[in-house]
Structure formats: structure tokens, C-alpha cells
Image (cartoon, rainbow, N blue to C red; front, side, top):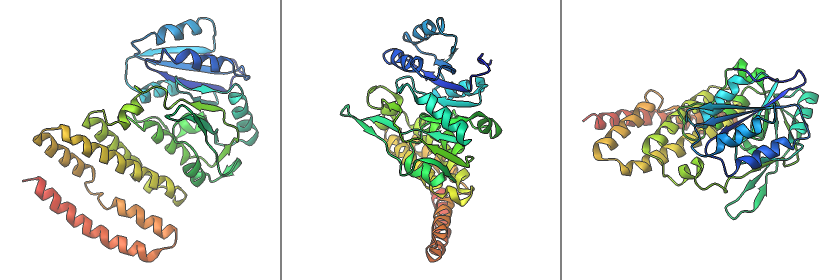
Length: 342
């Protein structure tokens, strides 16, 4: 299925929707108020059980730019992937159903993308805090930036929103959201795109309002409160490990992204191991075996990364020490496996 749009339309926006009836109309109204009139909105209703679908169909009936896709519940990653499969425009951006965009965001992002021919446009956001106030993000640099990996890692929110992507890069490298992750699957998409980007344009004006604290029942809040089952955290840790390995094999200008992926992997495994207290003894034993199997043949990958990191920053002695430690840890892994096999 493809979206119909005029020849002048260069921009598609993908919005996954799940039980968002209290925030959805505000989001749609911010779309309709855009000064850029030529765009296509792909709302993917991910099996909502509230009035979200009814609200979307009301707007789609009066505005041909709005397309509504209905699917069984499969999570935000699968919903965004459905949207990505439908895009035919030159550029694509993403929006969360409970967020709001400023009326000039599409116009300004598309203008700099066409003028500079950059691979990615990023926009600072206003992020809602727990006290209801908003914090405005700031970048250390603005304008066109070549070889952007370090800038992106240090400055830019790693979710998929508040960014303008080129569809040809997404399709050339078949970049999609990993659907086996419960959280941070959007981070994986963004980082995968970053590693293929040669240039980024950073706008200075906050044009996206991220309503992080407004919906306490959102998945991200439940995840951070550790209310999800052990399997959810385990799947995320395993997926983060795959991303980490991918980034470790990338060029050294992605070294800071590799560091981020390692920290993501480490944090997810901490959460999964903490959530094991709800399992019985046999389930805990199986979980530990699963943890070891993820590291099978790659236990030293942690230190391989740090070796590359210190060599990159010209600390060869530290790198050699870490190489020796890695050999010791490989032996410890073998001992640990023997213990679990009893």
C-alpha cells in the first residue's frame, strides 16, 4: 500500500497510535496548522481499544493528506515499520501521538534539507519534566556539520522524532525498527541511520514539544519503573548487544556511538537481572544460561571496544592491559559455564 500525494509533496510524517484518545486531537491540530501545506501524514493505529481510531477517521474524512492504517497491536516498532513501508516521498519524519510540533517545523526542516542537500536535519526539543515545566535542548553547534557522529552522540536526543530523514538512505540500507525490542528500538533505528549519514544540519530553534511526563501509563514509564516481565528486559538486552557489536565493527568516527550502545546493553541487562527476583529457582537458572549464551564467543567484545577506544585516543599501554584482561575474562567465562552446566 502506498500513500497518494501530489508531485509537489516531498514530506511524509509517520505517527504510531495506541490508546492516545486524550492527546491525539492536539497532535493532529499541530499537524494541520503547519505553514508547509504539502505533506502526507500516515497514522498507524496499532490496535487501539479506545476512541483513537474514531478520532483519526474523522480527520481523514475531511483532509486527503491524512491516511489511517489499522493493524493488530504489535508495538510502536511494528507500527512505524508499516509507515516506512508506505512512504514514497523524498523525505520522512516521525511524530509521537502525544507530542506537539510548532507550526513552522516542516517548512524549516525541508527548506534546509533541500538547500544544503544534507542527509539528516535535527531540531532541538522542549522536553516536559516531571514538575510540568519544559527544558529546552541546546546543541553545541548549529548549521551544516560534516562527519556528524560525535556531534549527534553528544547533543541529539536519540529517539526518532524531531528529525528529517532521506528515504533513499533508509531504503538503500534497509533501516527499520527492530520489532523484538520492547524499548529503545527507535534508538537502534536512529543510530543505524546516523552511521550512514555524511552530513547533518542542526536547526537552532526548538520546534518540537516532547510530552515525556504527561502520560504516566506510557510504555517508557512502565519500563523505567521496572513493571515489565523479565522477558521484556532480556529481549532488549540481547538486541542492544547486537547493535553494540554492529557499531564496534564500524569506522572509528562512530566510537562514541559504540560506547552509547554498550551502556544501553549494560543497563538493560541490569534491569533484566534485577527482574529475575520474580522468577522461581529453575527459571533463574535458565535466565543465567541465556545470559551466557548471548555472550558466547564474544565475552571479550566488551574489552575489544575499550581497546579500540583507548587506541583511538592514543593510550596504547591501557589498550594492551585491556587485551590481557580480556584473556583472563574468557577463562572466567569458561569456568562460569561449567558451573551452570552442573
